[in-house]
Length: 123
Image 1 (cartoon, rainbow, N blue to C red):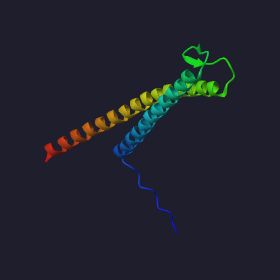
Image 2 (image 1 turned 90 degrees about the vertical axis):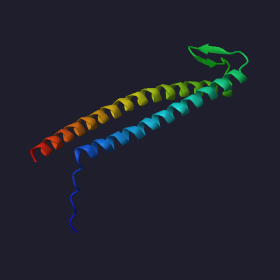
Image 3 (image 1 turned 135 degrees about the vertical axis):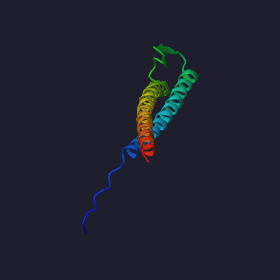
Image 4 (image 1 turned 180 degrees about the vertical axis):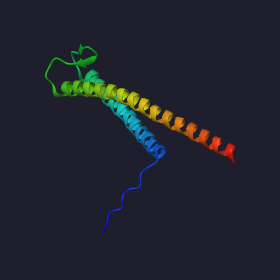
């Protein structure tokens, strides 16, 4: 059976697909921020409520004793901070990319409208 060649997408359709893709990625970045905040708050609650002698490592609370709960609380705090920071960076990046593709779509629409206006004047 002969293979059909895929029909090429128009430039505007390709750009709209890319905008939708970056919109989806931006939503995933926001969900990553939410997950990071949940881990960060959970780690803070575990560390603060179960600690007898609480110490601070920069902004992360920890207990110098080697209890499992203090270790879990510290790990959750660090992991939550990393997820939240990474989510903010990704959300900003994907928003910029989405904006760039949206501008290109707007520019191509302006060009098409101008060509249509010139075509109407001739007839």
